Length: 612
Image (cartoon, rainbow, N blue to C red):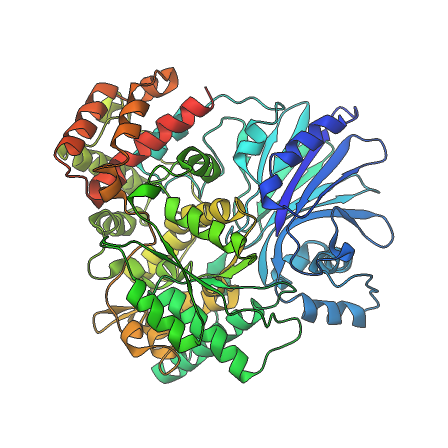
């Protein structure tokens, strides 16, 4: 896991060493263990790399890495979990390896299979490979976009990096704001990350499951992965379906325990994270494999004393089951303003809440010398976790919107109108121009995929949430907030084999008898505490935002609203926004719904002020 960057001067002039060094330093937090750069022979191309050493942490894993024959050079961010199996296959074909790293396996796979290597990988990645012979540059992102890759192209240069802010602060691109995207983010904070566009006009996102070539100064992008094309046959009986899910999930966890450094987990006490840590314990009992980390008994729990979203008792129960002594991080009102500007900067985009709890928890991992965390992300969007009791109304509305939006482009426009009308009635719609000036829906990855005819509304909704809307946004957040502290997050529920299998299951395997994630709950019988396995309560991993906005964040919010930010005034009716915020604060009536609707405006104003 690392940070990657690159500059290509399309006119053939040399890249200034200061430019690639500055771009690489801007992602230094992603790789605290070293920096490397590489220049092509004519110096018109330069790669930068910041290293987080996990697999082969010695000199063998150093990047940028050249192939044995010197023809290809790579910068790579991520992990290829099945690298040992691929290495054996490549060795059988004559490949010779000089290191124990998965990066060298990618180079050998490229020389053997070119683009066909991508479907063979089980992992998460963003990578760039330059061919010194043909002078072609290849870039690719993993199936579901777990690892980020942003780029900017102009007639003068092509530049890429792991984070948006690195490009914006590099001094090498046009940093004007895309106001249409800004309006879209304020109407629907989940409606951007699945697209290629970003908040900045020149910055583009290589979407998950896509690759691109830069040939003779021209960029071409294509989609190499479409989940619906890889759905496997489903066993005939529910018992067989459960057994297969259990097998795939346990293997996904086992693969992600491969590490040459200590690993751990962020444990909330909910079903997803508890299933992961209990499966880790089960894997140890079954027998660890080669390169598995035996230093895995590290569980980190964020607790919120007195808040409604505190799950400490359940986390303690899961830890006892897995025979792990957890480390607790208490987060209270005193933390509302702790490092708030740094947290918002590290988030690198606009979201529906302030993610202090996540940021603080990953910092706790680093302070305890744990740089890898196996977490439960993806399960909710894969199997319907947002349908639980007690969920936020915002997600209930989103579920209904996803059902409608999955039908057509016209339906998506109707969703926008209905959403805006509902927000206006509630007094939480502040975009200038009202309903006459709604932002256009952006094309999102996978939204036009032709899904199986027999699928019902739930399966269609989950497919869209997983690929296009909710999950891409969550993946972005957790990448930025973990890598802000040099922590790698691995996600067993997002193993491509488990994803395609679970997508193919009938809806009755996901929602049954009043439970979501039915197949997973059945698969984990006798493998985790029963009280957690059958719990209906769903609590998101969030900072206690209503409590914070009702008290410690009030002065910060007022100061932010007082600031003069012309770009924000162009977007928003600030008088109406200020009135709504003042009423909620004065009456201490912030709740999760008002937070989800209004915080994006505050987040946007902070971000536009940052780049003004």
